[in-house]
Image 1 (cartoon, one colour):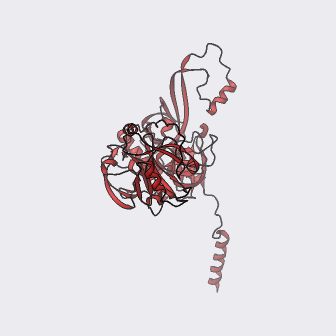
Image 2: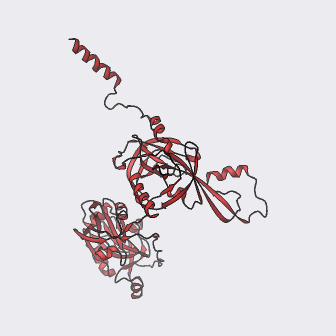
Length: 477
């Protein structure tokens, strides 16, 4: 009886001290994490000498810089004859973290970009001039080095094990306030951002501001899982959405920077776009997935392998391509010269080709768009398009054997991405891909679709090709 009573009292005591299922357990202990790992976070200040600028403004800041307004209030205006070109020093601040006792530090490429001098300040107030080992603008990762001994270092974690909703913490120097700590949760993983094709960002709601760039993102084990890189903002300040570069990607970049001073990336030589539900239906895919090829570089690796516009890349080197943004990252991480298997979806059926990956050049600019001709007064077809056949001169100039020129856009087609001057190359529906050779053929093909059907067109604009879906045909058959 005595033992039973003791067990009852023990269970009762535990129930009073432990939260019930579903009850909040309170905030984690951020203080201990900061005390253990904060010393490995550094402040980075850079100086860039800008030569020969016409100093209409006496301040070494752009007008959108927060410091411009501060200086404008307390500095006297320039007098006549004081606008001659002169050199000035542009200074900026950022953050970083020490990854090895040899003095190697990771930060953002934009923190040290074009800097003439980089100074690293530790939490113990020591300052060192740093050497930039290398910087990769495509991922915004940079590796710098200081000559020092006995340095504290961070512990690195695995971003793949991060869970959405998990607590994370950032340390950095927002607006120059050294070793500021902010915390939040992981909002999403694998985010793709416009013009950022090589980074699957970690999205958080951790407060990040100018000066935090390059600082570490910690998990609650005290491991660095990311480099704080940028924010989404309409005001220039933090608005609840920030992005970090996964640390495993950053480590791969720093290994290449340390070994070669540059990053080597693979390339296929294709222009791709996202596969929407409408495009998936047009190509006969069971669901929206993969990367839709809308143009293939002449003589590039993809063309040599037999890849064609209209193919959907579903796998690359054994890795699934769930979204179009997956392909540049996976191809970019492939060693140039490698021969890899590429799984495609072509004309309603799967197939596989082998591609020998080439190296991505340093400058990857797109060609300029061609000028668009003026519309003419003609009748529109069922899609609301006024089209004409290419003249022999146009076909020769554009190096095309067929295609229809869009002269005007009306009705339902005006709500699409089509533009006057675009060239229609093919019509795609349910896995079939028909080259467009004449206005009469195009109209005959359109007559075969029921009212309300979706039509996908392969469109050339300048030197770029893309697929455009028109939702719901109007007019009679």
